Image (tube, rainbow over all chains, first blue to last red; front, side):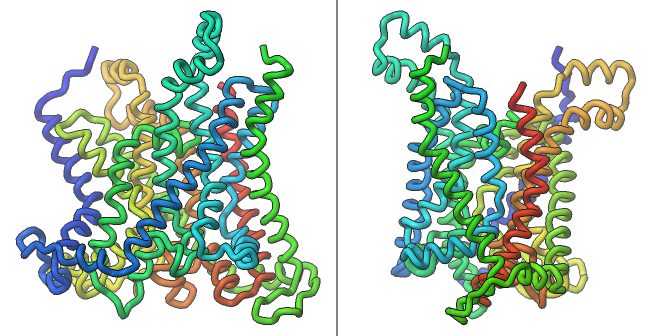
Length: 276
Length: 290
């Protein structure tokens, strides 16, 4: 029996819920609004909320900075590249662990998880020196490699929990019906595995896009993704709030939308299946 | 039914991921360990020599280490306090039926997807700026003296920013746990005359305890390594007031080029993180068996 909800109670929680939601979202909303102001209006007191002359000038200026598109490209290459390589490594591994588990499968999974617990600063020095000696500093290749390894445990774990949910009997049934291995993979496995793979991919692109330890420490001008580009706005002599807002809005908008789509999978991915 | 052949195939399928991860974990860690016993400064090439535990002695007796350790604990503890309590309250509100629930949920989880450098700079400049910031304007409209956040309360300012980033994570996980709570049980308690507070204390809280533990442990792992927020707002200052262990080691390595000292610090950081990881791994491992 569902609990009856009085209209008054619902109204109270509507007001409360929206107030809290807007309060938490406010910094993002404020950034969005400021990105359409002139630099003068951006720092005006009292602050201008909606009734100012909206302008797209900041977006033009940020994009016209010769290097802006380079940083966007870097972000895309690094996050998508590291995710795809990670998937290529993880899909077979997770598959094997889910469908032909051995006594040691659990240990392997736990060990993979434990690599994720290593604080990045513990290996900063050797990695920096290796990168320096191999000419990988400030290259996309180097960052793709590091981010692949960082997110590989999460990818394996997420895929494992998804693959575990595919009933093995269905595969057997297909085999009994005379499906060849090729057909089994194309017609039976893929349709069942794709949603899990897609959400794993989405979450990992988000994590790689926002990664801000290695991207800040291992890049300079050439391979810097948006995280590092935005960090360059921290210098006190170059405080342009409206332009910072425009650059920030463009940097977070695509990932925010992807995040909203993958919110259900987020819990599973980030808790390694401990909370579903 | 795993035949010998499928078992061999399975091993083959796993090996690339396992071997690469193993190398990724072991090679740099062994190098860090090795460097930590050397006098090794990039500014003085050719003077490397074995000095035993001297780097550890310097690192662990340096007053900066204790300041950084204290700051790290404050940062982790403060953020956990805000996000866990805030997360529980928010999860309870979001669990109630109301109009626009789905949209509010999206608004609440949004900060999690904002990259750390953006959230830090937006908060520092547009909200916390002592003259033009929004908080300063609000304070002045009520007749108060605006707070110069990063000068007067630098560590607390960073805690606020980090807590804003992690509140959605805690909320989302606690909400997921809350939604699996049996509604009939609550109803039965209600009919037996249990008030809202005792229902919360005796039913809801115990039900969420596992999720709360998961939130605390996972966040601790990430919060020990907070870096970008400090780098773009305070650079660890003023003085050492916002330097955490991660930032201290970064400064030693890439600003002072003291490879040996930074490596010793890195090993200390690994040990600290492992203490937390030990509990987390056990908790998740237990869950895997079910």
